[in-house]
Image 1 (cartoon, rainbow, N blue to C red):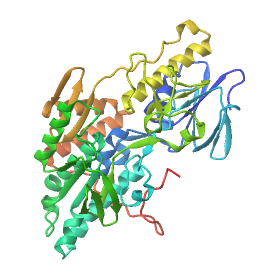
Image 2: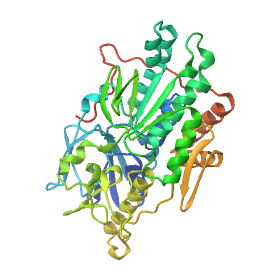
Image 3: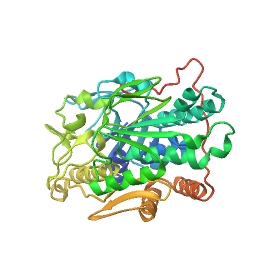
Image 4: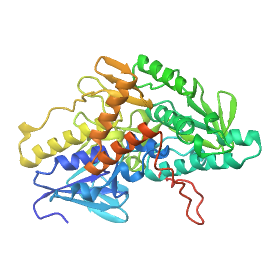
Amino acid sequence: MSSPGRVRIVIVGCGFGGLFAAKALRDTAADVLVIDRNNYHLFQPLLYQVASAALAPADIAQPVRAILRTQRNARVILAEVTGIDLAARSLTASGQRVDYDYLVLAPGAVDNYFGHADWRAFAPGMKDIEEATLIRSRLLRSFERAEIEEDAAARAAELTFVIVGGGPTGVELAGAIKELAVDVIPRDFRRADTRRARVILIEAGDRLLPSMHADSSLRALAQLDELGVEVLLGSRVTRVLAAGVEAGGAFIPSRNVIWAAGVRPAPVIAALGAATGPGGRVAVSADCSLPGHPEVFVIGDAAYLVDARGQTVPGVSQGAMQMGRYVARLLAARISGRAAGAPAAFRYRDLGSMATVGRSRAVVEIGGLRFGGLMAWLAWLALHVTTLIGFRNRAAVFASWIYSYVFFRRGSRLIVRPRPGGDGQPHDHTD
């Protein structure tokens, strides 16, 4: 419960936006309530490394309570928000009513199957730990089945891995899976030649990494080609089945199809009934507030905002962090009565973009500077290690990367079997 006379700020979601907003409200005269359906903050940019057996889930996640335990004005509850009553300034979380004075919505995004929700059973996405560990288990099971498969065509299907979507996640995952098959596990198998594994990256557009400069797209394409990844550009997926995927009029037999083709805001955003922009993101005002409701803010992947300089804020981690800090400063000024001290309209500061393609391969854009190769890969490593939450996670990830680089090994190759009676599919968060 809130203390009498104190403002209550409720933050829904503890991704980058929600966490950075909560931490920035540490010294305000307000009670901060953080609600999330998971008890951890997930460093989502490295989730693909869990899926490709490079890192363990605990390396990229940190309990929310541990992160905020020294923040006396913050409280955390584990619940899922199912409804929002804007008029009453309340929301429903796991059946309980929660009132607020200010509401910060940072629920993140879910995979977008563009009207084909049935594809998810055969092509899981990668937005949470459960899905990443499912993908990891499927990959490793395919290598195991290939070891005992007598039929050549069936063995080839087991050793064919298809990633749908040529954005950063798809590019990074394609490179990681190819390196796993070619550099890490060949000596572990006697019959199956994992070096012959096909990794196919399908992109409906005419180039990879569409959010980056065309030079970076070409550089990433060349690096994937060096690894032996097959890239199909201008190929739209029309069917996904248990036996494989149909794209560009051709059917590709595969037991492993992974979806990285797009995202949409978490379902709770639909409860707002607000106007939306591209991808279903809520069109917010210049101060990240919901039009007509200055007490409600939407940030991160769920928000669509064109800032004062005409720049669309991308749905990436740096955008969520900046929005979280901005809204916290705005609320602090309002609560203290210092309206003159409130920040001006939100302005996004582009700190650059980067994507890794594999060992010693990456593409980086910082300002007008664009480069690739080893230096880009080292820059990518440095940024991700320093951005991770918690010293233990930084140390564990750095040690794992050094170990993998020197010894061509990956230490998180566990096959996690589904629970008895389960279907082995990821939980559908889109219901």
